[in-house]
Length: 416
Image (tube, rainbow, N blue to C red):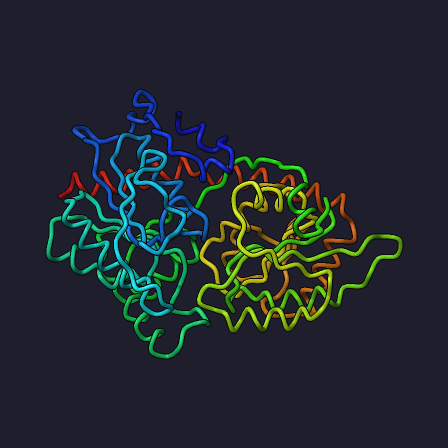
């Protein structure tokens, strides 16, 4: 399998047996430094592989498989509570379980510590942390070993609403470490790179998430399981946590006027709790007994592809993001989207226009107006979405991201 073929893989390959991905050395060696060698790379901060949960897991999976295809040895350290890891190798990537404390406040940091200790025993060339929290243990390899430390910032986790005062203080310390400790810091959006430049005065490499051509799946499971039909629902995909603002969307959706002669439009909320059970109760109370609002739980593979394929539109009301993969993927599917005007969304969508509508962050009235604009002219919205999706697919590439990350690694190891 080549690098380019990765984007064409069926979504459900993530739940099948692992495949060894062979590198195409004649193509990918061209811009490597003289004397380069294959590297041993450790990934820490994700829950595990295959990716069935969140954006960091998907990011690590996509990059790790491509780095293996480029000739490197990659080990992903997985939490022993991650149920979706049935093997010790996946897509050519080595998987290793280490212990964690699967609670809201200790899960990430406990696993980062055990994974770091396990990684140091394996003597990698590069230890790559993902997220802010795991960076709390980054001083250990940075100052007490010869391992080069890289940290990718996927979002400002210290600002998330689900954390209490003590947790925010700890994550504040992690945020400080992320600005001072790594040999190289990477941000998935220009907004995040700008934050680190302004806050710490330090250079941060910009390497965004990628997206590829998406596979269409006709409506089958979604109809039998959830009563959803082609073009008959709006879609939200993400963890059900306060900063995703699903409650705002539910209230706005219930205010949309019905359309005479048309079947009732539904709202599919795809995702589940992330140590946020109380907030999920708030969402269900906001939905009440409205039969048009459907909670599907987490979805991946064929089911998630089916949900994207057949939606009338995608809504991203989040108040805090890094560079959201769900929004990127919705655009790649050619879905009309509505999103809040926070900087990462504007970075992806630009100004309000047909196919990519923008509303004022947290403004319920403006969200109702944006949804109404999207639904009023479906043909024009689909055309605008198709054109914008094509531009994003050309700009955001996992292959490009993997080569940029490889350049970072090789420059560090060569310099050392």
